[in-house]
Amino acid sequence: MSNKAILRELGRRVRQRRLAKNLSQESLAQMAGVNRMTIVNLEQGKTTTLLTLVQVLHALGSLDGLQGFLPDLGPSPLQMARMKGRKRLKASGATVKPAAESGGSDW
Image (tube, rainbow, N blue to C red; front, side, top):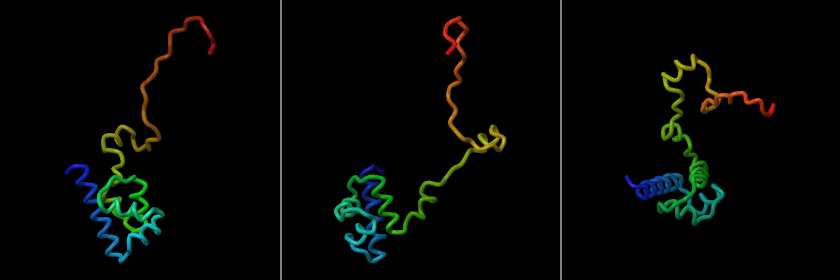
């Protein structure tokens, strides 16, 4: 599925949700804090921002699907075994070896 087809499908689904809630584009726009033309463009599958999509989905009460859409994967079993149950706090970086003492600065 192309990116344009995905945008059209998202727009179609947003329109379905809006109509199922018996909302006009204007009222949804007000609830989401966006302009009515933003809703028109979204429903037509035109490019929009992620923030706009989140605002509209929030106004429609449709953010529940986020868990199914993009579930939190958590660490893999292999990562868990390596971490021995500890929670990962940051990304690992390249290990820097100390430079050989050159008798230079104490910094």
